[in-house]
Image (tube, rainbow, N blue to C red; front, top):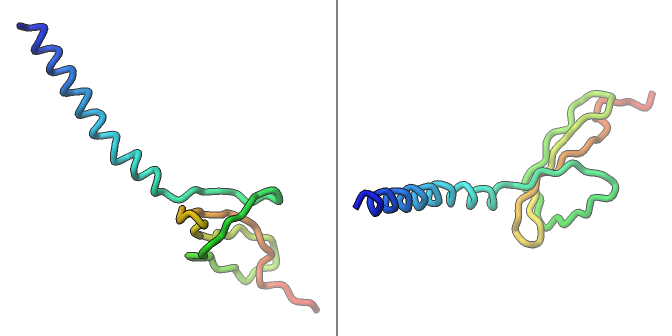
Amino acid sequence: MKVLVVLALSSLCATAALADEAPTELADRNAPIVEDYTYSTHLDVAKVLSMSDIPQVCEVVPVKMEYEDSQGQRHILNYHVMGNGCSNG
């Protein structure tokens, strides 16, 4: 009888553990994919959701673009651009 109770509790704990993990796995699937841009990065941009502002400095700065690909998966792309604070004088 004790063995059955222990087995039942073990099974219940395992089921509870799986139930706790399921939302996390689901959340991970919906979380945006974060990528650092390189020249070999293949971009599949169907819709731009947001872009960070480019600061008024005369140097290379990091920026981000959040977008959806053609499959509806969200991505965050980190890349670098020249700031908007340079003058040609």
